[in-house]
Image (tube, rainbow over all chains, first blue to last red; front, top):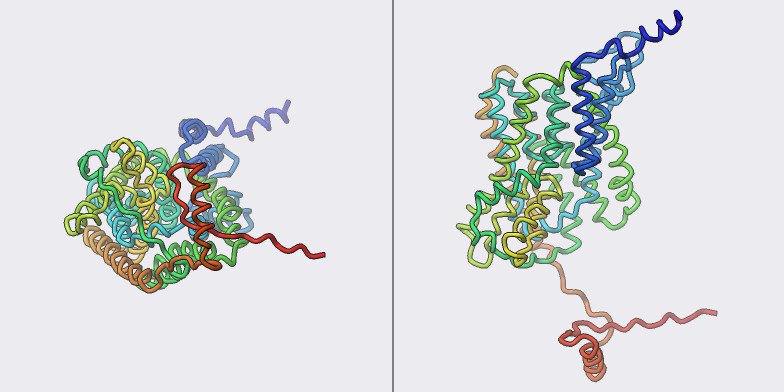
Length: 384
Length: 81
């Protein structure tokens, strides 16, 4: 009987708080959205499960930026992964390596002007950062971490937040991935609002073919220029482009396959789980989290608008026959390839299938990955 | 960092993103001009005109309106003993 009482005394049930219970619901919701709605399942399932683990009392499976091991103490499992993978900024660049190995930059190379759409679609980052700072009272570092949600790029968001505001990791990462999953809901009304039927009907000519030499030089070229201009974005852009060089060189298939499949999958597992493990009820259930979710939506909306508006502006100067379908500007928020698909579906639906800008939209879409990494690098350079 | 002016930070950062990507746009344009895609080289001799007409007629019989754009002869490998 004493043993039974001792077991009950040591069980986690005694330590359960209402915050833990609410977080179980949040974790369940994330897993439900991933399984039933197919919303970013590769990340929301690990994040959801990690959130559940973090809220099991006495299990010591949460992770925090404030954790300091006492002498002789064993670092708990997920905290160890956090310390080695997030604090050291190791995991996000490794994911970028895999993304580079999976990404075809030819649509961007064949229409270099679409790089500008990827730049202007970072507008939401700065609008949300200003809102967080001036309206909601976040510090400048926190505001930058919240703003970067508008880049629609998970690894970049985690990379920047781990350095500038690690205590906001859970909320910022969940907002970023949730809104990326909601791109098909968020973007179409904004595209509809900002474009006319005549603009949607713009059928862009077929892009020029790109030589294999240019495709191989591209990653080297981009890395050298961006890393020299903004060194703090080198870990992200450098790894992205290294992965792409492995893919395009044609002589490193084994490395490219590993980076684009096994390695990115392994890292995604750990990254998702450990981000979920930062969502401990006491630190997550605060008004701040709600503000972050609101600002994330603002960031996504302004980024979408930024891409579209620059395309419209460029059209003022471009000759007839070379005009850009402004809808593809919306794909400048990274979220590869979902936002390009959203643009394709929107335009095709509104032109009865006459205009299909999927390949054109892939240009700004992959440019957005570079744009958000550069924006994160700028925040690091100016705020760290 | 003590009380940074976030408005100026954001303005500078956005300008830097636009400026750098604009520079990259120009650089990429130069890159694709410098290394243009060459048209695919013709493999083997020009096909005989009579053979080309025969193949085109056969293709049209199967798929009316089809246009033959390329004819390539693939020789069977010689079997080694």
